[in-house]
Image (cartoon, rainbow, N blue to C red; front, side):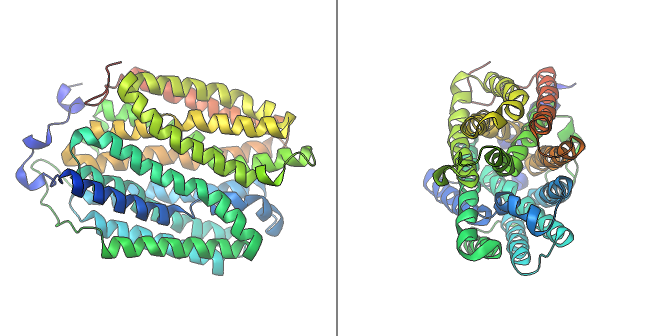
Length: 430
């Protein structure tokens, strides 16, 4: 494949109309703080549904497959919406796309709190939440990528991912605490109010960007040149496998630990309840994501990703079979698995963003997200199907459910190695 498709032109080589303004360091830091603060508020309710999932099996008489569909609905709508919303940021003001996304997030949580009564209504509101995620997650990163100097992008990406990871981590324990005090509807009300705070920040404080003319030779929603960029696609395909397993753990960790707790009565103390363990998992993962990105700079991005995916495969092959033996062991395995999954999270996204053609960075991030959250859609759903096919929650059922995750990781790792991506500017060569 021609080298021009592998190596994006420098931003200085692009037509002036397509060059985004790079901010001075102080202004760039201010923008990073604003975006990250808004992301925390917007995403603090993201995992309210999986955090409270065990009680919905009883309230709404859900099967494992139905629970998997509701969890996966979030990622289904994300995959469908993200190519349109994120690609649009190549010529439209990212702030306007962000406001649209946060509005969907506010309405989705409010709908769950006030109107959800069973499978179909919950499915619909989780679809709307996925559209909200599509309009905020990569849009926030695109806003930063357009304004930051290239060598700072990797660390800014890690900070952006960390802010969202912190919000996701605390969403488990916040949902559990509010549920104990005011019920599950109260948990979704709080999530909606926090997202409304993010909307106010974006509307009142985030800088506007004038719509830019398209760079010469580019078209709106033109994804074929993105698909031809082998370096970026290597990171994106690996990200698909990464997000498959990450969203399996996010979506089913509480249910898995709750199952193990029922097999060992009295073994789950309140300070280590399933929602608390899930919060600890996500918090550790967020820290590891930032550390992993630093390690990818100093040790080599490709090498770090290879180590992380190999360890993920080992955990996926064992956690479902060994975890049910002891609640303490199950918690330790969940925490360990979370650490190795998050290890390459920032590294993969920074690799895709840094390898993208700057004139098509929005489209590149759209493809990256579309592939990644395609895995995020199928992963939780596949776990629900596997559990039902295995006759319900059991040691064998959970073992097989996590084993299929390992097979996906193996395929993603093989594709990553075959495409042979390069590192980014400032990374140690692999």
